[in-house]
Amino acid sequence: MQVDGVGLREQRTFVRYQSQREALKFLGSVLTDERGVALLYGPKSSGKSAIAKQFVRETQSNVSIAVVDASRMKTSDLLSRILEQFGYHVSLDSIDEMLNMLTVFVIQQTRTNQAPVLIVENVNNMFPSALGALCKLASLSVNRRFALRLVMVSDRDIGRIIKSPSMRAVAERVIGKCELGPMTSAEALRYLYAKLRSGGVERPDDIFSVDVCEKLHSLSGGWPGDLDAMALSIIEQAGEFPIRLDDIVDPNEPVVDNTPMMIITLTGDPPREVRLSEKRALIGRSELSDIVILDQFVSGQHALLLRDENAVVLIDLKSRNGTFVNSRQIRSKVLLHNDIVSLGDHRMKMVYPAGHSSIEIEDPDLADTAKMKNIADARRARKEKIPTLVPIPQRKR
Picture (cartoon, rainbow, N blue to C red):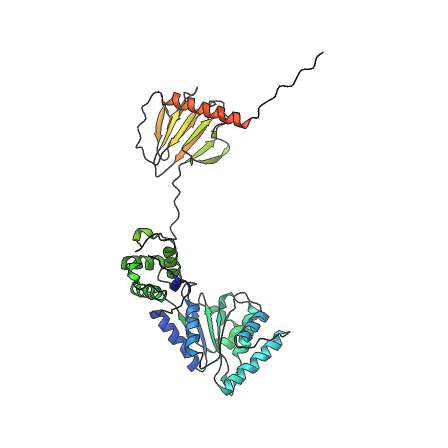
């Protein structure tokens, strides 16, 4: 089955849920209340921009509307962008000129038609000077009626910003604030199915079962932006449909690295970590060892670590001073999580919570076999590493 997540990616359909319906109704009061300033806020994935766009679609035939993302925008850029949104593509040299032009437009619109609406997104990230320009626009009036309707959108409650003395022109016009809430589980199911249908999927339940929708709702917290992103990611990575519950991974769950690791310590030296990513690792004083231990009581090839899918085996290679695990001398042993290996004055702590002792080691010749194999490997590596030496002819005396 070929499934395209275009309905989730391109946001072709605005799917209303209770909180969004309430937000749209609240924004509508900007047009009817003479004060005409509204505050809308919610987290980044709450669909604020989608609501603003839907509000524009529903009202633009009756009134001029500009939507501007004012995050970290200079005052001149903000005013220029507002003018462009209202249909004026002009080059003006100063902020005063842009404010004057906006003033003329706003007052003219209010007198002849209806007060225009300005929707400003990311107000919580605006520069103070840009906020000052908004205050000047908010103070405009015609026949004692405010001449610009203003919707201020933010990721959090900006009540403290609005209450500052410099924002008085805006604060006295605020009709209220609306905080967006998440979807319920049932709303999330209807939301996902509507989005999939808009992308051409005839039977959305062939993609996401009710159980899968419930899990996606739980992981996303019911926020539409997160729900869209999760659902789209799963569809794009899916090998087959319908999606199973096991296919859904919590993005907030930390990735667990089950690679076994040895923490090597020596009194007075900082500890070092060695991950056992290979099937075997030779321990010894020789520079050809995988784990080099510079200790006079450690043999050149002292011990060998072998790992399979779920266990790590330590084999003593008939070292001169022996290998100890938890203070007991061993020939071979399956290492458990937190076991302490002693090699001379060095200590090696086994870190492998996922490992277990499912292997029995009883072969008395295993050490000799392992040692001979590693000696051969070491010699081969040394031969590859060291270039062939050509004898230098001796001069005749």
